[in-house]
Picture (cartoon, rainbow, N blue to C red):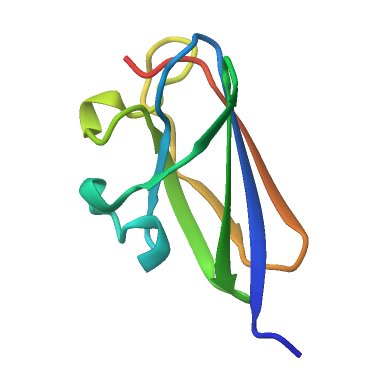
Length: 103
């Protein structure tokens, strides 16, 4: 029995952007080091995907950023700071995120 799970991330943005990254509390998401953020693959004008492996039952927190800078962290509909996304590593988990803006 594997002690790992694969998690599929999909990020859809309101406005077109060239690059999107995930940065979070786990080593494979950069351990909150923006320069080590994981680049997502662009699969459409406003859609990005990424697949990452996590240990089962790991508490994962992360943010979505455009470019590797905290100035481009995701914002809500009123340009407010968005709380960290979080989940517990389980098999078959999908994270679907909609980003209103990065400014």
